[in-house]
Image 1 (cartoon, rainbow, N blue to C red):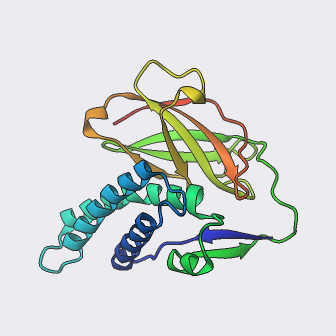
Image 2: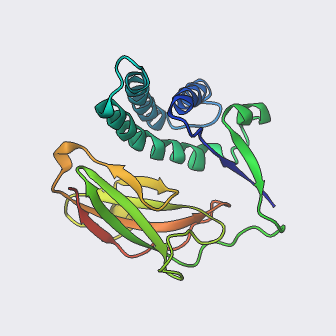
Length: 224
């Protein structure tokens, strides 16, 4: 069975040119591809910030360790948003032509067999790890294999719903923020004004057929 996937260039220089091209392409086709205006506007802001910091960090006359750190921190903000763009809005979007998919670096991969993946039956075990100021890293494992940080077979990402500050949510429906976590240890970066506040989060697996599993237990962490 063929499914769609995507990838980003590895080098910082190529990555910046690629992300600018993708955002520009999505802005031009937002209506045709049913991309939410608010989400695209937020992407444009993060894209411009990464572009500016990349220009400084990649310029021989201005590059320095601080500039490189600023560029990498900006990418850590932009990358999860790009993952969400692809996973939620671009992959398997029938409005996107084959030629458009080439531009967006969307390609098909074979998973074998003809039976679609069933909805996940297990839940993510989450840990919000405090390792840097204003950053929580989402570390996950599966309830069936808690010793491994790998996603279950057929799973594309962990959907994370979270709320910052009290009162504590009683269910995922009470959460106001969402994030798609495709790799264990992906970061969530917060505003300086949010430091010291409590984050309440729920997670669930979503497979490559866009079928979601049950929500796991709520976890909490203090924004460092």
